Length: 278
Image 1 (cartoon, rainbow, N blue to C red):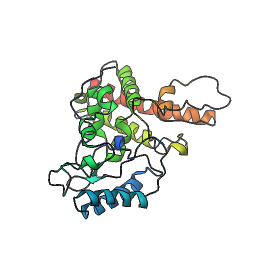
Image 2 (image 1 turned 60 degrees about the horizontal axis):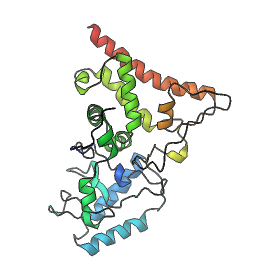
Image 3 (image 1 turned 60 degrees about the vertical axis):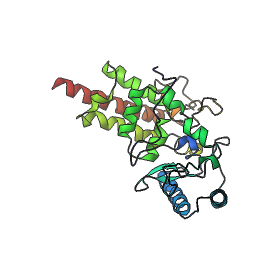
Image 4 (image 1 turned 90 degrees about the vertical axis):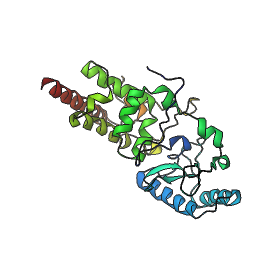
């Protein structure tokens, strides 16, 4: 796999609507749906805009958020930062309310008041920045539909590497951004896969929308796939099933899961063939 041990490009802020706050524990909440997070972040942003920019007031803001929001973390040791909110011109993406570019901060870096401190936040590159090939990351950044989807996708290094690797095997050539230019038929299956990952129907409720602990210490690995009681072998899509967290109670469910993935790959391959037959 193509790795970059010394990355220079952050993956967190992409566009006015696409960004990632996963390393800040954004999705480590009882309800990590887009609707619930949007409401939570909008409230934080509104209150923070009214918060004086001094140490006591900013720390009081943190205490207020902790009192208001339930302190229930699906992943116990994954810190959830109370200073993540909605940022940008129209508040359409997630970001750090303490960042010097934040509205009302006047260029002052307030991240020293956060749990990790300004130096860590400034210098940290997530595992995806190091382990996900840049050409794959470019595709995810370009075709992600919103911040909620992007944050849950870009941190899935193993899943994305396997996904794009399967696409490459199907068409027998490397995948790159320039292949998609002017070819919506190839773009749609990629977006379909992103949506499928978020709404995977065989994921147990305990894993909600697929919140993952993606840090290198491996404290919370993905659980093994739970196959039907009368099934004694692994599916050809076992890696996909594991990375998306899957429980199958019957052969019919297992076959349905395989069909959903095969449909994505088949549609991509068919679109590629049409283009190269023109």
